[in-house]
Length: 190
Image (cartoon, rainbow, N blue to C red):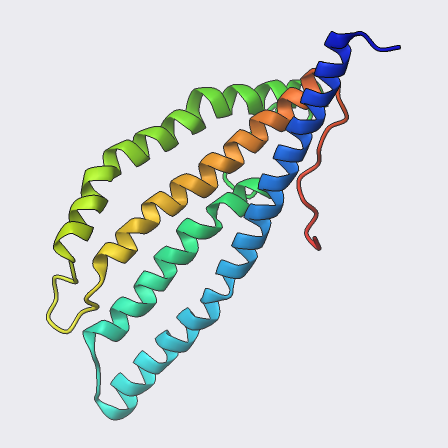
């Protein structure tokens, strides 16, 4: 028979594993969905080039559109990129380290650098984004897209997906360090 503390620890570890897996799946799906915007970027950019150089027709809003779509893709897929370990990492010692040492590095890096960065980003961006919404800010260029406030809101999307994935990384590291079955990131096909 398990003692009460062991049951709570076991249930807590299972809950943490479910939490980690849920964030992994969420970021994987959001990242995959957002990556389809790349086709839109290519299509709009192609149209801008053909219209400008083939027909002498150009509009600022069309150029804004593919730049804005690029920003939306970049900010939205950042969580999935972190999930898939696609961000730049100085791994002189990391790659050859044991799984436990890697877990310590991930946990420390997440708690000391990643989460504080996301908090600072969201806090410092708050007035910038809210102020933009309050005035219905549009592009500064004549004929530009009229909804710049929507684009600025993607700072919060970035903070949410990267912050959530950081919490999942920290949770995965804790599971490893507490010698619970490690939760692998969501596989590419999932």
